[in-house]
Image 1 (spheres, helix red, strand yellow):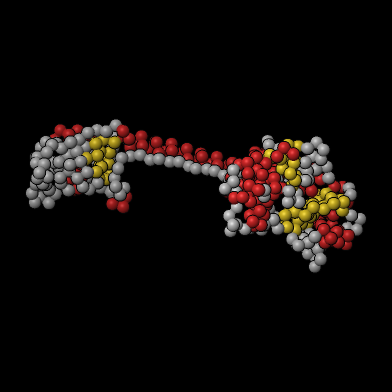
Image 2 (cartoon, one colour):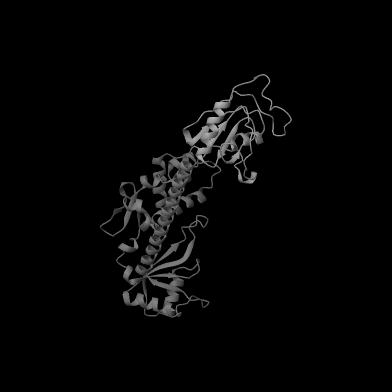
Length: 379
């Protein structure tokens, strides 16, 4: 990993395990399963005219969050150094000049051998090249491979670069490659033990993979657009509701009587939807007109003597220390609420109220907020 990492490593660190994690992550970034679909790295690639391979700056990769998480004690320069050292251990990557890390093999779309190569899968992870050659010789004698490449399972970081049982097999020509694909389709391409193997032309396999990625991204974009539209609709509805409720709510303070007296006093001027219980709180009317009428009356009558309580047992007592304090009522503009304070309850018929279960627990002014979050993480 280089002297910088060796200098800072903890004595208890499991070097081999952490080295493999870093190498696995690096190989994944540069793999056939990731690099062709990474829109950021696509703009960072340097292409070799000699062998159609690509490379990327180690300094760029050193800034990736997962690399930083794997090497938390190193500087950006030291992380880049560790990545170059890791690439030297890889069978698919190599350290290039200029601090770049390159692939040993072309990307499938750039590979001149892709038209006469197959993607072979279904072999056990332990199968080696001799096993592949044996299978092909037994099932397709005329399809002698020109080269083979054993693929690792890089998506699962728990597997520590384990082999996947999948292979790239280059044949002599397109006819030989098609013969292997045909044998697999006919179930005659089998591994020792009799289980059928799957084979696809290499270019066709990666074109299908690209189509899957494109479809996944399309669906993801649709879901994000839908969530955004729903959030915007919810926000619009909240604003519409707030505007509709504007002017229907009074806030009171200094109320000395009980809740029923408050309902009676307010209900004489308009139908009440609900009211809080206590010396302070809110009263919601079913119409703006009722709220405005109650506000005006309570403001006008705030200095009058308190009435009998709802049981007729006597006056609704004011705070003895405060004495006969005037009721205070104000119309508030913010949030569409009006404020009212009253000490005296008006005689008259009480208005019907909603059941407690339908009333907001704490009362309150009309208003609502809506929002939505969306994100994604790749790599």
